[in-house]
Length: 254
Image 1: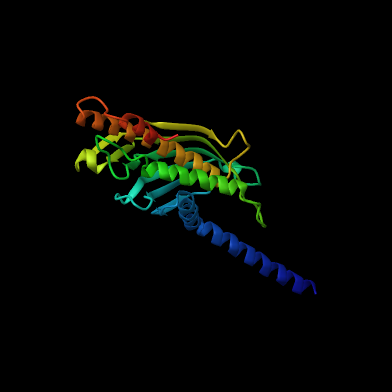
Image 2: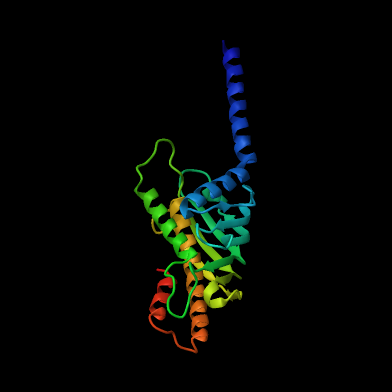
């Protein structure tokens, strides 16, 4: 009897060990799949990741080849591309059920395409851009997730990000009408966000994504719109004609 129980426990432990090994050995691919699934749902565009490398021992990780596609109707292949994102977890926060603490996230040299639908002329300007559409999509997604009734099973753990840095970025301005095919690239000012989710004791992945994407796209939209304003002014001899100035302000984002 006891021998049979002992054999049964050994088999059970072997199954559990196998499951844990599978999760650990496939953790990188699981994270990659989660980023692509939930990123695409939030932005309503195609989000892809080249690869993920995460060490549970050191807490250091790298997300490479992140790309956020453009909404329908835009000509550039993507809205944002990042070669590598460096992540450092606080490994002491991993056990238990409390929020997972991310010490730092470094997004280096992102390439943002700021594209205005229909371009801009001296008599008028479109009031929409790819980055503003993505901002609104992420905001609406976060609202839907927050309002959704809790599902069965174990709830996803919340997260806190101590510091997030965006450095060395560039914004490529795409407005065919006023630029006549000329490429205009302007530097993206550095971005530093602190204590994301800390005030509420942790934030959901959807809320985290909303804050990060909103901050990056908002700054890129403002930078792109400011560069676009200068281009329109130069084409108009130094002054914005008609109501173009007021309409351009709408492209700055919230």
